[in-house]
Amino acid sequence: MTAATHAQFPDRYAAIVIGGGAGIGAATARLLAARGVQVTVVDRDVAAAEDVAGEIRTAGGDAHSAHADVTDEPALRGVFAAAVGRNQTVHAVINSAGIQGPLGRRSHDVEIDEFERTLAINLTPGLTIARVAIPHFLERGYGRIVHVASIAGKEGNPNMIGYSASKAGLIGLVKSQGKEYSQDGITVNAVAPAVIRTPFLDSQPQEVVDYMLQKIPMGRTGTLTEVAEMLAFIASPAASFTTGFTFDLSGGRATY
Ligand SMILES: NC(=O)c1ccc[n+]([C@@H]2O[C@H](COP(=O)([O-])OP(=O)(O)OC[C@H]3O[C@@H](n4cnc5c(N)ncnc54)[C@H](O)[C@@H]3O)[C@@H](O)[C@H]2O)c1
Image 1 (spheres, helix red, strand yellow):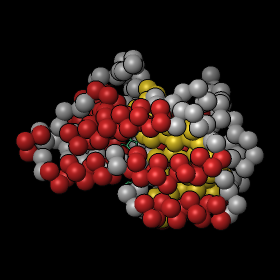
Image 2: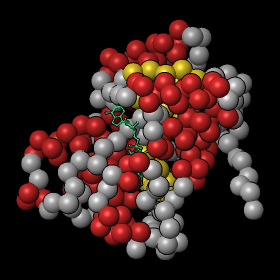
Image 3: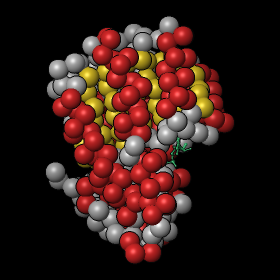
Image 4: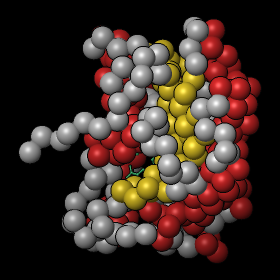
């Protein structure tokens, strides 16, 4: 059976995809552009972002690339300003930037600074992005923010303390922020994928991958298309009665 397409977008709908240079972010940028969305692909690896944007343009889509680290508020403001300068109204921000942080060690062997660095990249941008995007959205009475959290944030993977804590924090942040803007036409949500086949996964130790796979009732990894479809839907006008929520993408591992 071929997958049906769901998310529909009006003309001149614009989205910023942070961490769009690879993996889940790149797949989402491609899918949104294929649905007619004007996409800005943002990454700290600007060459990767430009590759994705160039590929989208070659396929007939509307895409620009931008260099920004998700922790850099002035740079993110610059990305917004550039989109507005192109006469775009930014409707949605998808944040897929993330790092694994310290792996394979229990908490007593993890340094405070490597833990804090993981929070700085995976969690604090939930606030930074809100500070940049929400004033823009409030002016228009419409906006979508979607973060890529993780099943690790719901369930807590051992020996990934920075990652699990940062993603749990992001899930909590989304709950709070979603409620704050619930009267303003703005939704703030997240997705919590289990194992998805990407370069990120390929860089994980095999025992970590095996641990995660054996917990998935469907017994397989998720696909980039499955994640991108859900992100595109949450970023679309159709996802209008859900905020503060973390959508599951775990093949049955988390049924909450
Ligand atoms: N792949 C999985 O199995 C999986 C599962 C659950 C959650 N996630 C989450 O999904 C998100 C994307 O993961 P992926 O598998 O696509 O990873 P990936 O490594 O393939 O892509 C991540 C992209 O984000 C960019 N990035 C990293 N740090 C950044 C920063 N500080 N500022 C700007 N850009 C930055 C990277 O350059 C890269 O282009 C991450 O937040 C990850 O935690 C992934």
